Image (cartoon, rainbow, N blue to C red; front, side, top):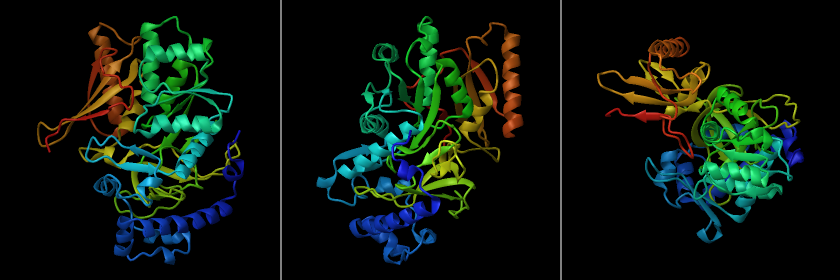
Length: 434
């Protein structure tokens, strides 16, 4: 099923024509209605009137997250505040929050791209979708909520946490799809195994999970699907660009289809900013094509992925992006080696006896950074025999070194030791004194 088949199956040449037309509008809209963009464009010697082809994007200056923070709260809006009907925001834990606004039309677009994502995952208007993303200023909860209603499916707006009640409603309401973070899906599986051993997910109507808001590996997907007896699909988005639904997996699980008719994406070298050819891995950059309240022009997302085209069996012709492998600002440089948390997770998930709960602790007691990987032992792998645990720890340390090329201290902890999160999991703890 496709929510908007005429767009989702559009020929590449036709899509590029549509993107060019919408880019001309979006660039002019930003330039003419927002002082920050007007000054940025002038400073770069760029005028939207000179924009004639997609190749001209290289002349458009980048937008950074720091610039968004500096524009707090409404400095990047391109419509009067009385035309804005909703505001979303990042957490602002590392400085000013980034604020995004939506007009009535923007809200409709947001609902549409999420509805398309749900359909891509195999959902339909007949589904009952339990939204276990957080609500409030975060885009996840309201994004999935309005996307569900746009599709015409039944929305259960429970928000995150309260796992006992989540499980009750899955049974009582006949929930068919749950939407949450991948780490919370694992937490649900843990909760069932520890507190409700008689609760059999196979006896419920739940058949799918739409997961996003944090990077997760293929091994994590396998773990979730095996323990909850469901199919798990990736949905992707950023609050600075729109929210969930910028791209999503289809039932083939072979990459995320990007909503090219609403977002123009480029891949650049994260170090130099140089534009890379299609198929290359690098930092993904977004330009909104239809947003009215808060145009996003060449926003450097810091997310690492690649864009490519293939003949997907689902019939969609939209360009695909790989699941995000990490973030430029998440990269750990350990003794000169670049390592991402997702790479460590991938290694851990391949070792039997390890639970999918871990933290990476960075410290600097000498001139060099120390890295400790603290990971839970699974219930089945837990043993009071010191020799068994020591062998497991040694095996983990060797595998991390062999795969990533750097030595790390491994610390094994008992099940349920690492703090659980109802939203995004906190994977990295930085104790370094800078």
